[in-house]
Image (cartoon, rainbow, N blue to C red; front, top):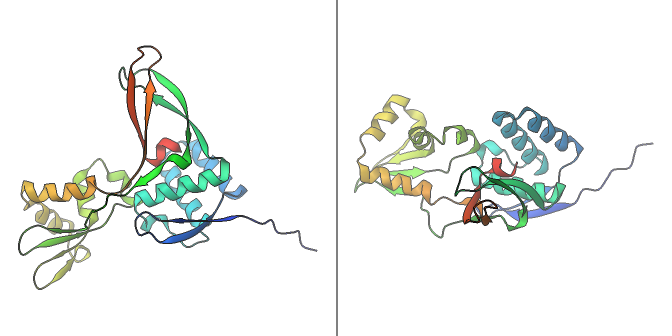
Amino acid sequence: MALPILEVPTYELKLPSTGKKIKYRSFLVKEEKILMIANETGEVEDQKRAIGQIITNCSFGELDYKDMPTFDVEYLFLNIRAKSVGETVDLSVLCPDDKTTRIDINININDIKCNKPKKNANIIKLNDDIGLVMKYPTMDIREDLDDGFKVIIKCIESVYDENTIYSLDDFSKEEVSDFIDSMNSTQLEMIGNFFDNMPKVYKDIEVINPKTKVKSKVRLEGMETFF
């Protein structure tokens, strides 16, 4: 005789990037183990892989985090966490006025939203003849976020002119680098605006430094903040 199967609640949300509705479930023991091991190592790569595996498992195999924009991954993971281990998380926040004092705060995950600008076109017209089709950075690009040049290369989906669409996969890194080097400052700024205006998962809070009594605004942003 087989053991009874435990029912797992199913939830639904819209992915910020597309508005597509997806179904997901909360953590099971096996996901708790994955998360615990990643937390113990403290390695960013281990945490990234753990989050990716949990997203795949909890979306019933429908989603692969490697193909998802970073803000989709962050938003979905936080919602999965809220349904699994509670809707609040305890954080230690650095007071920005003295950059020394830390205070403990409690955040409700349901209050963390994905801010999606009304307009952030992924098509950038560099001049009358040539334009770019951009894509949002994925989790695989996350380690390059401090290197703006690498991020730009990886987030250009294609280049087009009046007659042709050029996929960057068909060109060497050197050719792509030479193309970007040929841009002027205004064209580079247009690309920068695309990244500046991409959706972000964050929450702004006010903290009061208990030592200086100074009130400051702090932005909690990035999945590692809530991991």
